[in-house]
Length: 380
View 1 (cartoon, rainbow, N blue to C red):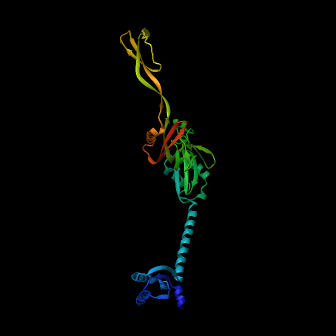
View 2 (view 1 turned 90 degrees about the vertical axis):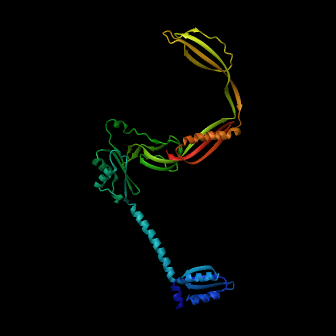
């Protein structure tokens, strides 16, 4: 009988280690704490069973006598049933959630409208309600092709309607009728293209057909959204391409360095020749010889008379130049070049949140290409 009660009640088995077991056990018994199946071992350890509701007092006494708990374990039919009820309840909750999720996918919870300008979303939703389509309508009951025709019939200001279901949303893409000079824009929409190079992080499509997805790497000028949609009949309908696309944008600054460089410099020597013209005809020509082997020429025209008989002076300034060869080792100007590329990159990245930055150096036959990239998050 004792065994049956022991197995039925919620008991705990303890294994402890320390000294003064007898003193501790006697004190527990005085406080009406029942210890069962006490077993003392030679290595200063002991094992016993105790009722679950007495464990708080037990731990206080063990702590009082500096006795360590090596192991504690739950036993008893009541403990098993509690655990079983918890597991069954958890499994049942998961099952019920899955059933609810599956059932919820069968209904429309949200109506989204894109492409409307003059017509409000409320007008379109109201029209859908009169056609029997509203929140919590079963998706299987919606004939998308018929619904498109009914919307066009009910709303004369619409020239095109496309109906699709996406998750729990009913998505209505529309195109409004245009008048007068707006007719010339119908069907002449341009695709939405990338304004910079980068990696796409988020996409919010308003209208059109996506050509990219999250994670794609695009270059400046790549097409992101095509200016058309495919309706439920499989027909291509022209619409304005609209989307909000967030990406990691790469703003690059490039600098090139030649270790051996030919450049032209001015020596500071000049020769000035002045020619005088009357009514466009030369009346005096300066015949100085130009002794420079290399030079640059600047011309000026000066009015000497503002009367009816204009006389002008045409001055030519010859500045001597010479060609020199420079040898500037890359390592001597490396930091300056990297900083120059960095300034160019940050100028392109202004007003955006910087995520990362790095630079690369590439060398080909004595020519060094320095690239500094600033990674920002922004709209393409």
